[in-house]
Image (cartoon, rainbow, N blue to C red; front, side):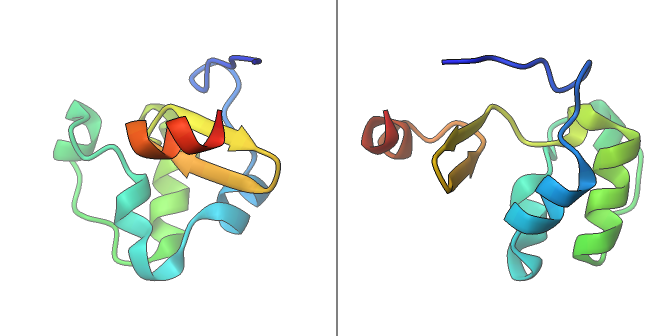
Length: 83
């Protein structure tokens, strides 16, 4: 398994646009981050991705990529299914 530090090598915008659900875009933002708490809530997928591109530590992590399946944030059940 390859591990990438997203603060040093953030995922490209195209990756985020492809894998972030427009209806649930806040599920992909690390709302516990101090940076996030200083900002207003993003109102759209585009605003959420713009914030993530400016501050990669706002991306919910870890990001698990297994084939075409991508999971943001730790979900033990999902990880067990995919690994």
